[in-house]
Amino acid sequence: MTHESVIATWRQLLHPGRSWVLFANGTCVILMEPDGDLAGQARDLLREFGPVQAGTAAGDFTTIGLDDAPGWAVTCHHPDILTYVADDELEADDDLTVGLFGRGKRDQDGHELVVVHVEDKRS
Image 1 (tube, rainbow, N blue to C red):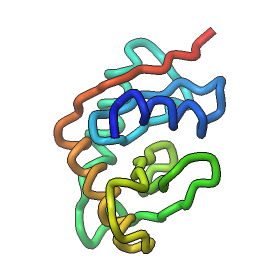
Image 2: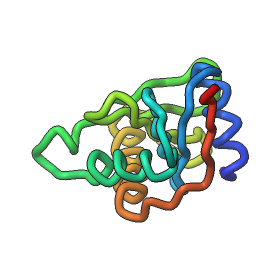
Image 3: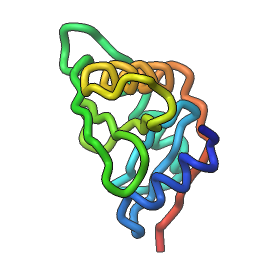
């Protein structure tokens, strides 16, 4: 999985008028009210809502099988933060395995905060 392929996947999945930021491990932060430095705005959201805290809402996730891309989106307790898991990243494809893997990627992105792409759709 390359950053270019994940960027193409998010472009395909998300509303074309939305601004969003992609992090190194596949986590996408959708900016519903984009303002100023989009990468900084997304880092602030992911710093707060990305790290996993077991036994709290920050440990929760939902796995969504994708019709328009090969893989899954893994949600978290913030509605505008999703993590992409490509179908070639795992041998297993059950919701629990995929969800835990995606949650781990979000946790890593929430600590590292490495932005690899900014999709700025402000007019």
